[in-house]
Amino acid sequence: MIKAILNFMFPPHCPLCGAYVEEKGSWCPQCLIKALQPQRLPLSVPVQVVIDNAWALSVYREGTQDLIRGLKYHGRRSSLPYIRTLLDRAGESPAVAALLASVSLAVPVPLHKSKEKQRGFNQTELIFRDWLQTRGIVMQNVLLRTRATRPMYQLSAEERQHNLQGAFRVKEGTALAGKRILLVDDIMTTGATLYACARELRQSGAASVTAIVLASDHR
Image (cartoon, rainbow, N blue to C red; front, side):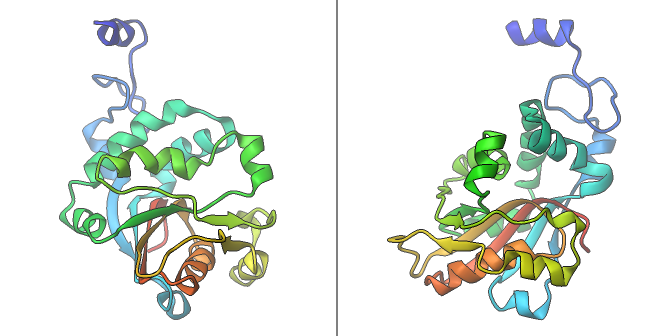
């Protein structure tokens, strides 16, 4: 009843086009189809050495960009119900379901401690933790970001690699031998961050690393 009253007083909207929808977290059918495009991402040869395959669940521009940026930079947790709806629908894809069934542990890409303190959360954990938990996949923070890095969106591919060199390590005492890791992040552009994290996981004994990001425009 409370939910119905709130929906009446504050009519929910589709996060992409603004059309009225039945409840908060819903998308209009057309925009959900537009944003929700689970697909396997192409990986460069060096990245393929440490990442078995990578998937994006949605498109970034003209899709989930505003939701992700609102969460990351403005702390808008109101983005999360819309993201969760998208994740639930993505999980209905046979390919995504099979991928999730093949892993034994989820690991989020970490923020540097100063950035996480400033932001108050790691957006990747907020996006994926509960969704993965409902599918029996535990998320553990086994990676550390050892130093602050420059914002990546302004950097070339070569500058990104240099920026991330030595930026991650696996926590001491973490047992990863034989683990099938699901590495998760909010977005993927060049794959430099995923590569740097996956390399540390593989060097610590992980049997495989599969990556999932919420969004990407990389095709």
